[in-house]
Image (cartoon, rainbow, N blue to C red; front, side, top):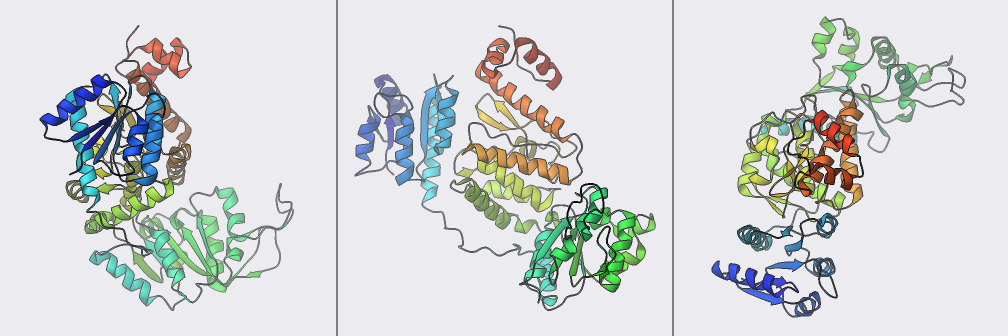
Length: 502
């Protein structure tokens, strides 16, 4: 095993770390500045690098950047002043494994270095991910039945109704049906009928003529015309307004429709694939869905299994989503330890594949190190509290032993947002996840999205500021750029604990 390198201009810190690691039978090599370490990298490499952030000459951030360019898998621990949040953020943006805040507890420092060491030793045994991933992943028998059905339908233009719980991947299956059909070279157009206001849905489906209504200044082609000769995927068909169901039935029956405000029939050569998470038979009995339309759509029914019916697929899905998330953020993919993967495979995730994907996004952003242990997972999962819903990701709150972790109260309505702080890879990273969360909540019909996400954002900022000011309310308000009365009111409104007067 290679030695652990310590880079610090403070001889006393080098000495303390050297002695503490020697007691653990760990070999070390020390440098007084970043330039010496950079020179040593020309002929040798460490198992773990521990570096101060502020030194004469090149800084620890400069050293971190140089190391990551040549050795992206090497764990680097940055030592910084406790109050220097900007430095901590910079270190994580540069790809640091973790950071130590001065003054630090030596036992905690050794524990962190040991963890980085384990990470470094695992790095060599990691297999490269497959170069090409199938469009739909799954080895479970329930998914094999879905694959067989797609194969049998590959040369057919028949109407298909896809059913299954939210988050099971109905649109992926619809795209696969299109891709393997005779219409594969023609357009695939998707429309979530639940996400379009009722007054606009008719125009969205069938288009409109100029002057058909106020604001219609030009003729517009609807989704049926856009999908001509191809496939039209109508998601959440169970939520379609009753009067529009009649118009859809007419198109499926005779292949013609009228644009809004139009008088000439338009021919539609379109294959329709519909999907719903609702029980259409019950909606028919309740008078909310036309029975004749139900029979038109239900020519071939394809039911997608929930994730709990195919939990043996969780490992392969998790690895895929971790690679995908890392690629989107431009970072190295995280890996799950055997224990963490077994723990995840034993969970019941009501949000199905979508929830697992969002969880992998959270892990990519928030989990320390490249190998994820059970203790790195959101506390909502590991402490047995209420499960996350389909489109939710855990909230982020500060902890006493780290920058941030998961663990705010889960939202019964499916709320929850990742706020990427010290673990950020780029501003776009956490904003992208926030947009993803907002889109999921809006698509699910969630009300008061601005209020829910806004409160969580404010809570995360105030909690983090209080942590870095040791609970001093006035100091936290000053750092956040808000008034004392404002932070006092917010602490009460948001139910934040741990604040105290100066």
